[in-house]
Length: 490
Ligand SMILES: [Ca+2]
Ligand SMILES: [Ca+2]
Image (tube, rainbow, N blue to C red; front, side):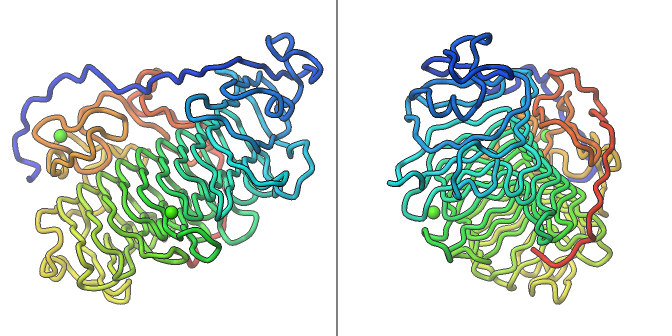
């Protein structure tokens, strides 16, 4: 559909999806600055002094609410239950900073501030059904938050939500050997410079299945925004199955190499409604490095991805064995002078379908050695219904981080209906008007996203309009990060 096609009338948007409040059985205990671990912990004025004491003394289904203040970290090594999660959280609207090691001596903390593990004290035991919510975690000598199982005994059903995790030596949030993890609405920034090799905002690894990674804001990290590495070399099946990666905003990562989203050894699931911009390596990489299989069977849809002028390729699928990926309704732009939109590892990657995208003219089927033009790309069967435009075409204000489309921009109403994608990045229903819009936004949603600088911003507010966010977003005080230029990496 070209920009002159008439639009049909848009219905009035009256309902947004809102996450249901989480209910919790059990007692609520408090931790407070100036509290005492000898007290009851049952009221705000009788709070305990340390989060560790609380973790060690509640029972299944209880909630620990930590009041405003600065605290040492904590170590979780016992399990809640599927019908009675344990919760450790910052009090609503409190600023709760965790910036010290747990007060428990164990090599298994690995210099992280918040740790969930199942390997100490002996014997190993199941650990799962915990929620960790609302903390600001910074300055760890290793990872800020680490949830780590074992190849023969995974953690399970861990939820890490609404945390602000920054300036940690390695990863912001590392989740390894964990099934059914939910990593949601966290802000992870300026992590991963300490080792000089580029670590990540979120690192999900080691064969865990069914992760839900949603609504996170990942920026200014040395390596990837989100890195998934199923890593067959250290045990487990080496496959991360059935991922949900959606509604994340990822920008200004990859200074030391590493895609906005790296997927190594991932089999099945969806990567949808993500906004990725100003990235300095690749945008989304679907590949095999350490994983047992090339990443495959993924739906990659409704993502808006823009690489910086030192970027690699926007969508990077370099292995011929990465079969049966479906690539629809994405905007894939690259500001690099010669790199293009999509690179494949072969002229015939079985089952790959790419169509109904907004792209720039530049493709490769030999891993970047040779760039081919649109006619050659069409001859391989790809993107016959896609739109080819110059980079940045159609955005409201890309320079200010507003990657919504203008009303008549190429891509509005031009997508195909995907039953798996019923909302946009803001949670507004798809589709409005005459069809789904290409990219992460559905046109005409009266809210905004969001973060427009590379500053130290707040966690995402996916329904920001409800918080009084202006139509231009919330510009925040800029805090530039001094980082090396882009180097090798996926
Ligand atoms: Ca697995
Ligand atoms: Ca539409």
